[in-house]
Length: 429
Image (cartoon, rainbow, N blue to C red; front, top):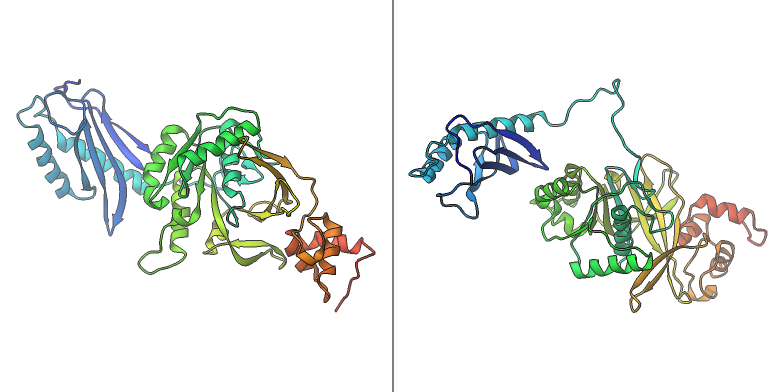
């Protein structure tokens, strides 16, 4: 236990995530101020004061915890009187509470006012360690959107990507981590047992042991409401990468005006404040997504267009499995790349055996696979044969744009196949 020094207290101050800490080792006291919000000209937050003192009543070391108006002199004066009342007739009755509150209020208001530093674009190049944290899926330090139909294996892929960062090894062929470090899986859909089982299956299939750097957190509140606690976790555990599964519950319901974009904007703002690379899992809508040339490159995520607009990269998980396949075949299609060209689709085959308890990712042979309608022939075929069968099933013909949409490829690539194949009749007009 600490005995309060008779002289003035020397304070230390730091920011932890989105909250602030003022403390004195000599005095055995710590003040934490978090959950800050502005209301007009006033800054309010939640103040928690813990002490390491004998002979004073606390709740597990917490002397005081309540909302506090950082901007108000009256609030400081009122709280000073309350704390003096709590410490009267104790060895710590001479504690200068006004000094402690003045220090933390001034430090916090200055830090909040300053914000991020101003950087001249004519000066030294801002530090950037690498372009990708997971190449080519997740650019460094920003949000990537990963979406597809339900039951397609999005969570399995996301868990594998997180495991690859935590372990520092390439698990999914063609998706290579560029960093190694702690990750956190923010789960809004299932439970710790299910995610742990997936991690175990992936590890067994790829011959490695799960690492302690893979953290899990079951989530209930919208991420924006949970951001401060998450910022503390990110700071204390050195988190480098987060997975949000999935976007809908992480955004929460709309605000007072029912704006469909509000939840999306709040989610992006909260993740940006965490300051780490993020992969957000989401569901797919029936709307088509087109590139600048008007070509169909995939579907859109469900809901607000801001999901794509604010993401720095977006990937759609598409099904390539036929009824004749024993394994699961999927295709990862890059539908948006903010600072690079769109990446070629990544073709994967999943050996997923729940009885043996393993999940293995293998690179597929690179052909364009099309789940064909019943009259079009048997199973799934490589590019040319698939196009031939799709055309045979459509007496009126198909445009290259329609074939590209069916195949989940680019119109340019489909045109190349068509014009290099004599058996395909091209009709203009």
